[in-house]
Length: 147
Image 1 (cartoon, one colour):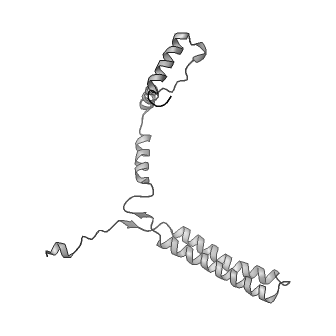
Image 2: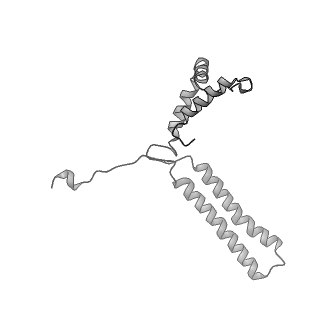
Image 3: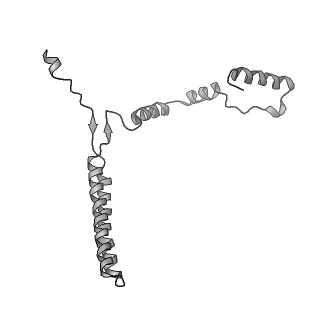
């Protein structure tokens, strides 16, 4: 076999990480606050609880808060922001379109508005021939569409 057949083609997708640090730090701080705050509240105000319940609530607060902190750290730092060169929903195409859209001059906007049928028809003053012309126009426009 040839050398090309022995070594399959390696495809490396573009994967970029980053911009998740704020989410990670916020989740970690929230998890630590939950892990320390809930047991503190239970120990400070739970004198009427049974000892078994106090232990269960303290351990539950530590476990839930620790899980939130670890999950936030992992997902915020490890989850990729972009895979394969395109953002979610090909956001780069939308941004590019938005930049072209902003470059339209006033004349371009007026031409666009004039080419479309944006004007409200003055149907209150229509004559019978105007109504017939409008009906023919609608019939041609919707011909074969079930109208």
